[in-house]
Image (tube, rainbow, N blue to C red; front, top):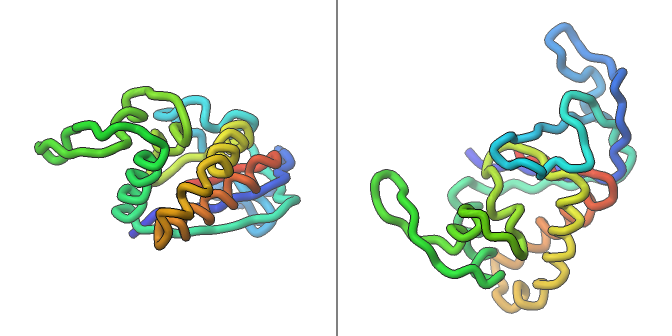
Length: 171
C-alpha cells in the first residue's frame, strides 16, 4: 500500500456534472472531486468540496509507499531546517524533524509536512506557496541527490501545476 498523488492545473467548477446512481462522476477521466481533510484546515483554499471540477489543464501523478513517504517527508523537514523532535509512536519515543510542523510551526513546506499521508486535497493557494518553497530549496535538495531529489522534483512539478488554479489530491 502507498500514497498516490494526482495533480491538476486549470480546474473549472462543474457543479452540474453527471453522476451515476452511487453519486460517482460518470466522466471520471475529465472531471475530478476534491476532499477537504478537516484535520488540516485551510489546505483546500481556492476550491470547494462537494462539487466536481473539469480538468482543463495538465495533470501529473506520483506514487510512494507510506513508509518511504514519511521518511522522505522527514528529510524534507530536515532540509528546511526544522530541528529534530520527539513524539510517541506505538507506545515508544520516536524522533523526527517533522515534529515542529506537527505542533504548529509555520515555514518552508510546513503545509505539506503537517498534512495527511493518505487523503486530502491541497488547493491552488497553498500549492502556490509550496511551489515557491520547492523552487527556493531546489539547490539544497539537488545536493542531497538520489531518491530524495527524484521525489523532490516530482512533488515540485505537482505543486507548480496546482498553483495554476488546480489541486494536489492525496489518495
